[in-house]
Image (cartoon, rainbow over all chains, first blue to last red; front, side):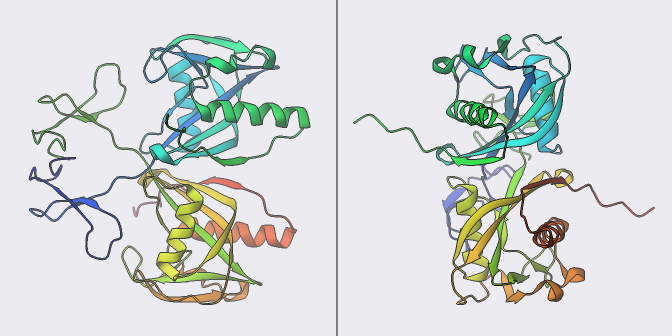
Length: 181
Length: 181
């Protein structure tokens, strides 16, 4: 951020009076510009013993597989976001079920939320951001070709819970990847 | 938003190619400015059969009672946000427990998350944003003087669960208040 989105003047980075963290501050109009974490919300669409994955047509992780998910929009609920993203990425209709996982990815200031969901029919196909959409049994999951660690973690928990016979809500944190020495 | 925070040119509101919603777009440098929901995260700090509430010293709802909570910051986890807000608003130390409620307040593009928490000692006092901090038994909760509906809903669920002998995670939506005719 270089300029004030309200008045167009140059902003400076400093800790405002009574605050504890540096913010982009506009001394011309007095606006303090806050930046906050973003929510990425999606679904685990189930059909019999299979789940629906999408192969990404966009960066990051072009060509890798993921659950349908994306940035939550203003003026929607988390469940509405999960249904919308599934419609956009897989052209699929779901009945959104229980919230299943909430995963902090704090090094990139994101919170990822995945819902269990029931696929309502088999009339799905790749949306604009997907190369391919496909149902996978547990044995078929492309573990080495998954796009995001939050998706891999959610699917691992999902199959553990399914084997245990009971699904519960999970909260977890994903740390920054170790940097090369 | 009137000006591009990247280059300072005037922005326009329109639906970018391949998108479905209007965004603030800068035709000078090509930046698309997204606006997304914010998370408000806090705690239900417990001490024996009491919980800690704060009376707000700031708007909105100056003078009303609330659970310690506030906007989640970049580069922290939801549990870290709950502990930080409790420290800031009530100068209190907590052990953060299970996530207890996630409440969509979509008409103001917020998601409120409250954690159960154990107060570690009784050395609390009002922070800069509080007028007063106090422990309340269920009978003492100032139901008509609570600041936010998400706090009232969370406390109602909390006491219902406590009576039932088992706490579980709740997801709920709060609709816009009815407007006067």
